[in-house]
Image 1: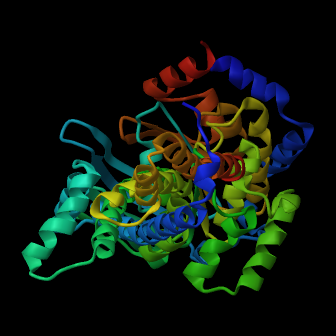
Image 2: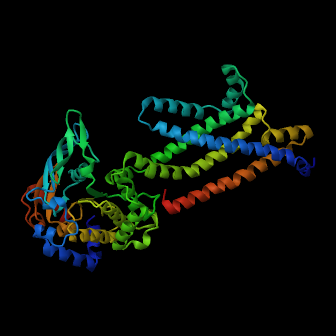
Image 3: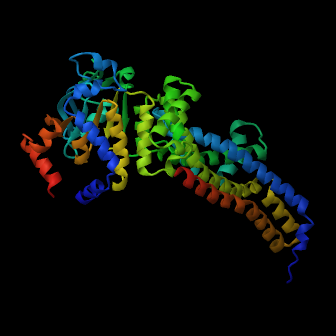
Length: 221
Length: 300
């Protein structure tokens, strides 16, 4: 059997549209998820116990179950539970956002924890109020330190978003699968799809390394 | 340990020695020192007969079995440079941390310039702190505590801007002046990580001075430094001493203690065991525990 990769080029528009949806979903869930994760991480170190329990339960549940189940649950079960139909886009966005929220909250929590106790002593010795400590010393450092890990979280999200094809969303994975079964050329089409994922993800993973090195050199954090 | 100390001594520059000699010629007359062209004369210094700091009957324990302070009493007059020495775990650092409001106490109180500002509320098991009084005290720690995400100048201006509402321009002007005085003007826009340990500690001192403290606490500020960096930090403290800044210093560096102190306090087992002039403590200690400690430090 001979391979003809030029066949795939004929479908570039469809593939591009699929990639467009994948990117849209990734960006949306990365933004909403990390915002959610940030507040969840604060809840997890809060002095209010119920807030700590609820946020911990949420994080552990979403980290401890497969993303595919979460996606299916929001697509198949939630409409039954609330009695209204929801589109696959809403279900996918909801589940991936909640998943990303759980993952990034751990990233933020680790970076909050990494701030040395001595710096807080210095804040107190300088007379900074608790609010000033948080706003000008703790949060800026926590966010800076979280950036490299957050970027890796986003790369994972980009790859895991391929799961949404399972609920019929026309993302890159879904489009690729359809083309490959229509023209019976799985090797060419799926290889090309994998390459497209890689071409987008690789610069991002490289960026993580660069950002990490730059921050280390400058701030030692 | 001893070899490191000897090495440090060997490395000390002539400048430090000159500064020290200037101070030492003044040392016996502490009151004189405080009034002789002092830049840091405090309002408190004017009140006659009243100590600048009065520490009364401090008790602190981390658990029923671990008692760090066991009824510590100590007075400090205005213009004094008090050096606290003693074995590890003897309560020296805890004392400074209590004075800064960083540790709770079980009983006792601390007065500053006649005002009680730290006081154990035994019924509520809480320590009451009067922040307005405490803000007149500055502290520098053993470990570098500069904020790594801020430039050197921003490290200096953060507290004046946020605590006192000083304008950015005015804080930066004062900050630059201080940095220049400490020979760090060129580093204003660098980040802490780009500085040596000695430079970081000098910045930490400058940062505390930005709030115009009336008393400075130094908690083993040279203990974490490489031997060759100790002198530059001690020199800055010497400069401050020369200008009449009241200070309380906890140190393991006996050479430094001997030369900067107007009075030495030997602290062990959570109490003050003995106090006196550097000459009395180092050359004729009265107490057995003091002798034992000094023997161990000087004759290993």
